[in-house]
Length: 92
Image (cartoon, rainbow, N blue to C red; front, side, top):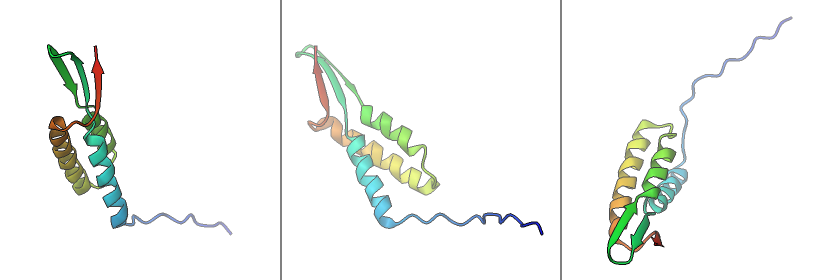
């Protein structure tokens, strides 16, 4: 007698609150990373490397509502970290 293959039912993926909170903390840390390339006092080029890396990570999010929250968190973290002494400074 042939066995029937059991089809997977589309179950709603349930994400624990602790995992969501951990992702927010990691995105906050990643989003606040900047690389500043400067030459003394004459010029400085800030590059939001954490924001770019965070956008790549957030695009793989399964839930659309979580993605919107994470985009907002990345944007706020990168704006705040622009004025704070956070990140890497490369002096030429």
